[in-house]
Amino acid sequence: MAVSAWRRRFLLDVWAEPRAVDGLPRILRARVRDMSTDDTTFVGSIAEIEAVLDRSLDDGGITPRRWERS
Image (cartoon, rainbow, N blue to C red; front, side, top):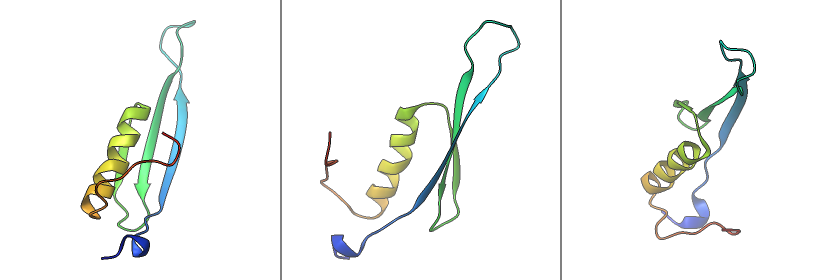
C-alpha cells in the first residue's frame, strides 16, 4: 500500500471528571474512536492517545515515520 493512500480518521472526546473531595483537581479522561474501524479506546493521558495513534500507524505499515512538528 502506498503511503499517500493511507488515511485514518479519529474522533477524540475529552472531559473533566469531578473528584469526590472538593478542592482536588479534576481528572481528565478521553475517548479515542477510530472512525474507520469503530474501535473505541478510553485513555487518561496524552501519552496514551499517542500510543493509540502509533498502533494505528504501525498496523497501517507507516514506518519509519515522524510528526511534522515534533
